[in-house]
Length: 111
Length: 119
Image 1 (tube, rainbow over the protein chains, first blue to last red):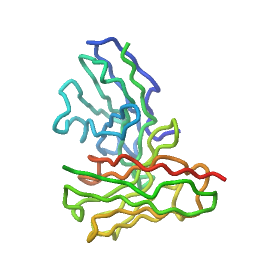
Image 2 (image 1 turned 60 degrees about the vertical axis):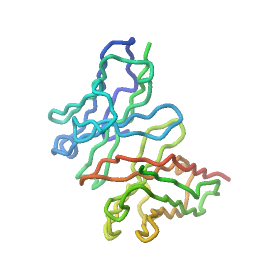
Image 3 (image 1 turned 90 degrees about the vertical axis):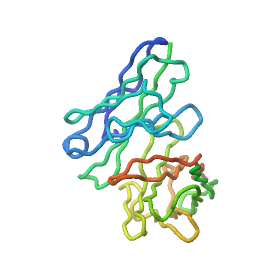
């Protein structure tokens, strides 16, 4: 079981908006540690999508946005496109484990 | 352009050892923490180990502590992961990643090296 909990899968039609949740605890997200998001396209290495809860690296479309509240965080993808079909992972730091933690990953299917 | 290139993966028997390398270019290697993350076949990402800029501080996941050793050679712009007492459950693609802004997110990743532990 992952320290950060994500839904195994989400889906949406092209043009729609989907959200992916990431639930942690008082030793990671709830302790104030930032949440970061990664996109992994099939057969490729992960790519940084959102850092510091809601910041996009250069080149990431503004269709992707992040938020954080309490012990949870969310990734929102608006204007869904076929190329967004991928696995998405949240990540933070856990003070109890003294290490970095990932969510179990969410597979996004574009219908 | 930041590039991270892992090497050293392969097939090893249970109980054996393997050393992964990650050659870095396109950034000042000595100024950034570095990390190893692995992904078992069909599974999610698992943080393995992190090393700070000088190599004086190292961090390990409980699943590998005491068996794996992370190190770096800033003169060669290279990150290493020495893996001993390998088990079947260590079978995975191992990615090296560049860390930024403590307590670090991972802004660049290598393409990965496959490690298979099997008899």
